[in-house]
Each structure stands twice: as structure tokens, then as C-alpha cells.
Image (tube, rainbow, N blue to C red; front, side, top):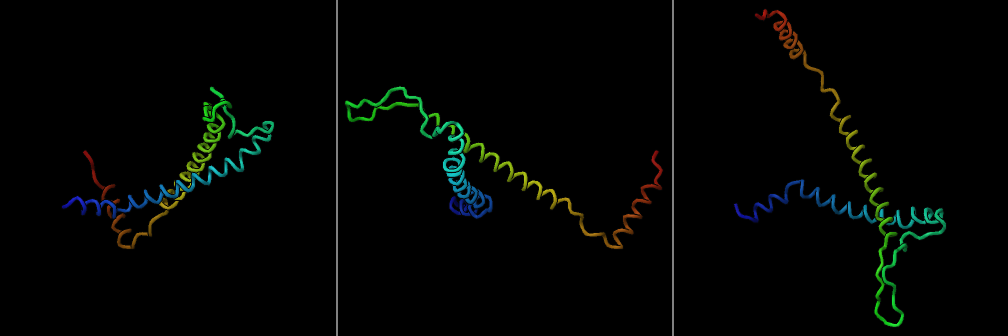
Length: 138
């Protein structure tokens, strides 16, 4: 079997397609969460914190030199880190809730009782149980 036919077989499996769909949806979901954090959640938190814009919070190590036209600013942007941390927590909680729902659906679908046995099967099961009871074990 050639490498291309093996690769085609590998791609044709549902797992690869499912993974690709998951990555694409996950990327879009990440953009939604970024917009939610940056545009909806952080402004009220910044307002409660005294009008602080977390995305622009930084610790300047070397400021710009206005005498040169070269951007020399060196800073630690810890506000962006705070935003990213909040985004991570929201995404992690969302995935946790999704897994919880999927597990609940899976449990209810697997715990459904099967169809009732036919009359012959019930009679055979009863005979089997009677034979087990009548055996004398040494």
C-alpha cells in the first residue's frame, strides 16, 4: 500500500475530520471569549477598580527617549497578562460545563433499559436459573 493511499485512508477516518472541525470551532470560540473579556467583562472591572484599563497596565523597564526617533520602550505588560488569564478561566469553565453536559447526556443515553425479552427468552432464562438452583455443589 502506497504512502498516499495510507494517507487518504487516514484522512478519511472520522477522527481527523472531527479534530479539524474542533480546532476551527475552538479558534472561533477563542475570538468570542477574547471579545467578551476585552469588551464586556474588563471595562466594568476597571471601572470598579477606579477607572483602570487593565490592557494598558505595564511596568516600564526603559522608557522611550524623545530625543531619538527609535522606539526604545521596554516594558512588562502585566495588564495584558491579566486579560489573558481571565480569558483562560472563562474558556476552561466553558469547556468544563460542555464536558459536564456531554457526560450527562451520555449517561442518560446508556442507562436506558433495553427492550423486554421475548417470551421464549424469558422462559429459557427461568429454566437456566432453576437449573443453577438445583445443582448440588460439592
